[in-house]
Image (cartoon, rainbow, N blue to C red; front, side, top):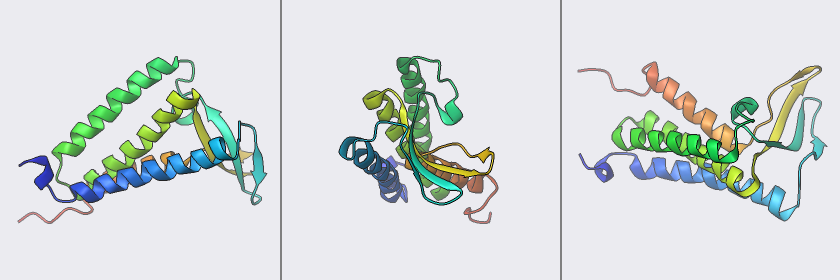
Length: 161
């Protein structure tokens, strides 16, 4: 079956583009328009701050000692593998999950290219506990993984005949 004939191809592509576009727009506003450079903190509530922190690694700051080119290579391979998986599946949740993850990953990869690190903004905390600081691309990636997990446990699939 040709890729274009598969259902949900265009809507899933739009979901990935939306994830990418929202994250890029947010970062453009904060970094390029408002001139945030890092270290800014805007307390919003007793448990949430709006900040700018530069993450030179991947999730949770892992691999932050690797050079940017190595992280870029890992990212390209991962995005390519996800795209191949996306192009071969007809499962709606998988298609949307993968494209959300791809949209977020591409935006974070672009941060590394433009800034040398990923811009993270949202910080939830409570007393001495601190959740990791994240951005809209991370939200898209997380939603994508949740959709993949829902598919894995059988939600969204038709019942066998």
